[in-house]
Amino acid sequence: MKYIILLLFLIFCSFAFSQQADYTVDALVTPKKVAKTLRVGGTDADIRGFDRQAIQMAIEAVAETGGVVRLDPGTYHLLAPVSLRSNVQLIGSGRETILKRMEGIQTQFIVDADYGELKLTVKNPDGFLPGMKIQVTDEDQNSCWNVSTAYIIDIQDNVIYIDDHLIRDYRADRGGLVSNASSVIEVIGAENVGVADLTADGNMLVNFLSDGCNGAGVYIFKSKNVIVDNVHVKDFNGEGISWQITENVTVRNSEISGSGNIGLHPGTGSPLSTIENNDVHHNKVDGLFICWRVHHSVVKGNKFHHNGRYGICTGHKDSDVLFEGNHVYNNGSDGIHLRGEREPNAPHRNTFTGNIIENNGMGGSGYGFSVNSPAKDLILKDNTIRDTENGTQKAAVFIYENGSEPRMENNRIEKHAHGPVVYEKK
Image (cartoon, rainbow, N blue to C red):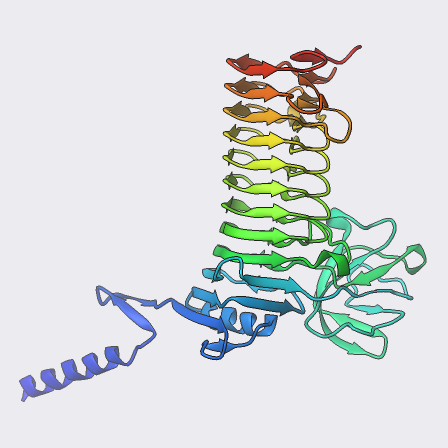
């Protein structure tokens, strides 16, 4: 009898395990949820539709277990940013998968919008819809961490209700504005995320400027272990890719072009960043603006060219960064610019090796390197620094009064009107 009971128990266990279709069993000890893959797009996709709602539905469906959302070729029209979750990969079908922002909307608010408030009384709510993400500014507080962002949860008459508290006091009589300026893709408070093989189209001509600390073509905030691979961010009215308060973010094999501000903007404490094999060009300001506390990072094998100001700009506590094998050319001002900082906050122990820095200063004049910071252990090694076109890159290295002299080893320097190394006159 006891053998019959044991046999029945084993059959029951076998049946119970077979019913756990969403799980695998690791040594029959620790059940693990199986990652899912969902396809979005055409008529035979798991979730049909070429809009933000379809993509977001798939992301939420795989978020519990982790998994992959694959996007068919086509143009997906976005009412709000596509928001990634931890352990989710968003993968397109190449550049023919286009995530495109809808047309921008903007209005004034007519009652002061106060710190901690969850509503905005606006002049004209037409075009705003629940689910949109908005940006709130006035003339005095319109950049960086003075900008409020939130999602609309309801609209009643001319009052817009939002899901997150305003972070400043904004005055209606000081040009207070509400717009739907926001990202194409965002990764906020997440980890182990990937974005690959797609185009993020900012549709710049019909959109308002999005602040780069709060939004971008691809915006990453308070997140870690994020990879952006083979993504084309184009024509975003703001910054191409911005990552703030992050750890271990990689941007590789991507193109960032036509941004209304900076191409790539790591900052606000983003160590272990890897920027590799990207083409960053024709952005309004800098190709790469390394902001505050981006340390122990690598910038390798990229092209930074035809940007409005600097190819690469670095400064506040941006230490222990390797810049290797980059081509920096035809930018509006300096090829590489080290911002002015006090010595404790300077970008120490940075190494530039094997780079080609040429023909910068296209806006009238510039330098290959300009050093305006007392950075310790700044090494320039095995670089080619030259001006072969318009004579606008006036010196290979320009050292401001506040700048430290780099250690230079085996660099090839050619054809600069003011000489290879020039010091600011005191």
